[in-house]
Amino acid sequence: MSKFKNTITSIFLTLSLATSPGFAQSTAPKATLLARPKLVVGIVVDQMRYDYLYRYYDKYGEGGFKRLLNQGFNCRNNHYPYALTVTAAGHSSVYTGSVPAINGIVGNEWFDPMAGKQVYCAEDSTVSTVGSTNAGAGKMSPRNLLTSTITDQLQIATNFRSKTIGVAIKDRGAIMPAGHTATGAYWFDSRTGNWITSTFYANELPRWVQEVNDKKLPATYLKDGWNTLLPIEQYVESTPDNQAYESKLPGSTTPTFPYVLAGRAGDAFGIIASTPFGNTMTKDMALAAVKGENMGKGSQTDFLAVSFSSPDYVGHAYGPNSIEVEDVYLRLDRELADMFAFLDSWTGKGNYTVFLTADHGVMDVPAFWIEHRLPAGLLDSQRVNDALSQSLEKAFGKGQYIRANENYQLYLNHATLIAKKIEVEDVYAVVREALLPLPGVSDVINLRELGESSINSYQLELYKNGVHAKRSGDIQIVTQPGWFAGRNTGTTHGSPYNYDTHVPLLFYGWGIPKGETLRRTSIADIAPTVAALLHVLPPSGTVGNPIPEALK
Image (cartoon, rainbow, N blue to C red; front, side, top):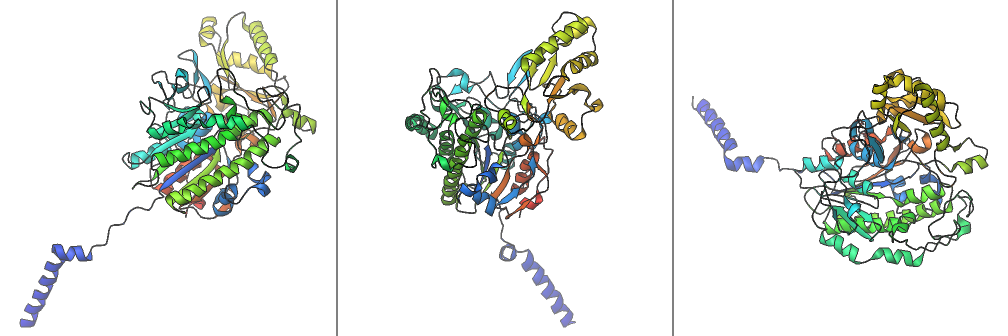
C-alpha cells in the first residue's frame, strides 16, 4: 500500500512540476525566426536578349554577369508568355507573375475605347511632380496596374514594415516593379537632371535623394563624352563601326566613336540615357537608396527593384550587332560587379538575394539581316493605312471605321458600325483580305473571336495572354519573323518571336543553389519563385509557378 501511495505521490509531483512556470521555461524550445534574406534585389535590364550573356562572356569580369552565371542558378530557356513584348508590359509581368490579359498593362500605351483617348501606362492626372519644375514628368503612379506585385505582397506579409524602392531612368521601369505600396519610386527627369517622384509616394523628396541631385552628376557624364572601354579593334564580336543602318546621337554627324555628348534645348540631359553612363547613374542612385533608406539592416526583408534603361536606348539606335551595344554591356558588367561588392560589405556576403532578367529582347536590324541574305524587312505603315482606308470605303462607304492603331492592333469605331449596321466580323473579313497580301504581314486575327482563329496554337496562346477586354483592340496584325514597322535605321521589339521572348533569368545569393535548367520557364514564374523564397503569398494575378530547381 505504501509503495502504491509513493508511486501516486511521485506522479502527482512530476505533473505539478511540468505545469509550473519554472518548469515550462526551462524545457520549452527557444523561439526561432523565419529565415529570410536581408534584402532582395530585382534587376531588369531593358532590352537584354538572352545571347548577350554568352556573346561577350570572354570579356566579362568575374564580379558581374559571371558571378551570377557561375555561382547562381541560370534558367537558360526563359521566355515571355505573351506576344507584345515591350517595356511596361515586361516590368509589370516580372513583378506580378502575371500577363497583360490580367494585370492590364497591355503596352507602353494603349487606346481607351471608353474614354476615347490614348493612355500612357503610368499616367496619373491626380498626382503632381515632386523634385522638378518639369510639371509633366512626375504625373505618374501604378494606378493603371490592376494586380498586386511581389513587392506589394512583401509589404502586406510584414505589415508594411519592409522597405520597397524602385529606381530606373524610365518612369515605368521604376513604378511598375515598386508596386502600389512602395516606400518610394524614383525616375530621371532629363530636362533638369534630377531624380524625381510623384505625390503618389511623398510630398517631398527624401533628404538622401536631394543630396544625390545636389551633386549634379549628369553634367560630369556629358563632359567626358563616350569612347570605347577597350581599344576599338578588340570588339570583334560586333560589326565594324559606322554602318549605314545605325542611328546617330544628337549632335553627331556619323554613328562612330568617340562621341561628343551635348544636351539639347529643353532636354539638357536626355542624351545620357543613350550612353553607358545612364547605367552608372542608375547604379549610383540604387546604392544611394540602399544607404539612404538603410535597406537590409532592419528586422524585415527589404526589396530594391532596379531597372537599367540605357541598353534599350542604345539597342534601338544601333542594333544588337553594334560596337555601341557591346560597349554598353561590357561597362554594365562592371556596374553590376560594383553593386554586388557593395552589397557584400553592406549586408554581408550571402545575406541578400538577386534575380536578373529583361523586359524583352530585340530583333537585329533588318538591313543587317538582308545584307546577309536572311529573311527580314520593314512593314510599310503608309501602305497599310492606304490599304485599310481604301478597302473599308469600298466595302461600306465613307466613314470613320478605325479609331486608333496601337501595338499592331486596330480599334474599331463601334459607333460607326452600329449606325451602319455593320458586324465586326464583316469588317475583319475586309481588313484581312486587304492586308494579307502586303509584304511582312503574316496573319490578321480577330481578337474578339480568338477561339475561332486559324493561327498556330503556340502563337494563339501568346495573343490570348496579351488581350485585355477593356484595353486591347479588335483586330491584330501579325508580322512575319524579322519584320516590323519602323525606320531604315535602328531596330525594335514587340513581337511573339524568339528574339523578343527569350531573355535571361538568373538567381543568386541567399537561398539559391548553384545550377541551371534548360526546362522552359516563364517570366511569370519569377514572382512566385521569390514569393516561395520569402514565404509570402504570390501576387493577386499570378499565373506562373515557383521554379523548384532555383531554390535550396
